[in-house]
Image (cartoon, rainbow, N blue to C red; front, side, top):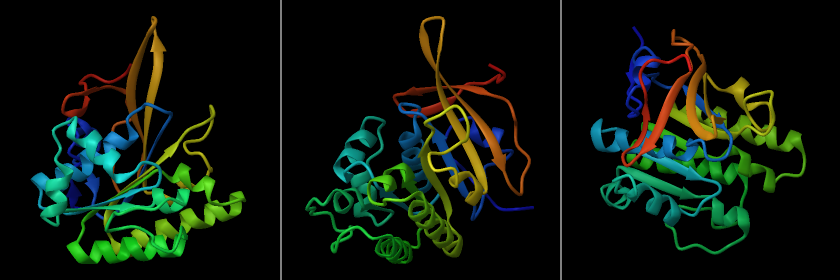
Length: 241
């Protein structure tokens, strides 16, 4: 029996037949507004607050203060968790944009994928992190000119996560009707794929989720409706939209 890591998202562990397999790297993909960042925050908050599993949030697009503010909307006090050394937010967004920052965990000498990997490694060892979320790999496109360079950067990050043996989420946007990521490589270097949808039905936008892949474990293949409420993402029972 493989050890499982609870997702912290009501209804998801049942779909995963027990939770994420410990040490795996899961891709969370979807279009804008589907709940990818919320999924990462909920995963990390549950780990730090309920299961004594410290976490690292690597933000490539939003400033840490925006992450903290958004988390508070769901009752998740990230600042308190940071003060208790249960959570570290690495600000890779500021250096990527060439902006100054006062955050304690950032890339002081400018954005570089090797420097980012070193910062993740250092932070993970500092608080013995068991969970990592990288949001979003799509943001790497601003710093690299070629698809090859972007894919190499993603491979390097995925290799680091494998070495650290953390249970990790990486997010990526879906921009077309085919594939499950922006750069076409993310789904091949991950051990699992969760796809989030936001589709119009009868004049109303509805969210849903499906687990496309989960190595080392069986899982449900149904499409489940989801809601984002005051406490985050909740997967509704039933499936088969």
